[in-house]
Length: 159
Image (tube, rainbow, N blue to C red; front, side, top):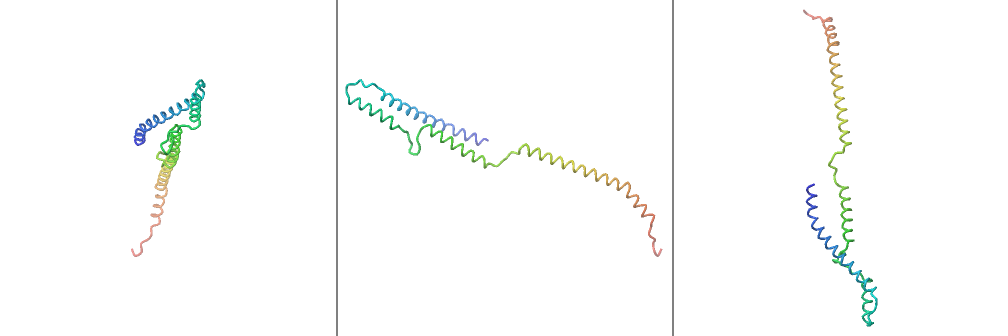
């Protein structure tokens, strides 16, 4: 558990920095889209046709060629954050499935306790049964055997 907390505290500053960078990139992209939209909708009051053409071409270029912040491997936008979260979730699900189960479930404890209680009860029953047989053997059978033995004494030859 402490390992997970330590890992979380190490990742928090990194995630904050990543969120700041991604939100800055997204705000810049929003402003570029807004500027393109505003330039395209400006009334063409200027008498110089060349300025009107440049403004219109620039606004169309902004609208049709979107600005992309990239690091060479991935784009810096909120889709990148979504990809990170999806990847982490996927790997966590996979790792959790392969983790050994360390806690004993409640059902297993109940079953173990019931089995132990049955064995203890069975042992108590066997002990009581053996005691009753021993008592019966001592009180009834041993005296009869002794009587039979002494009533039929073997005769000693040569005496």
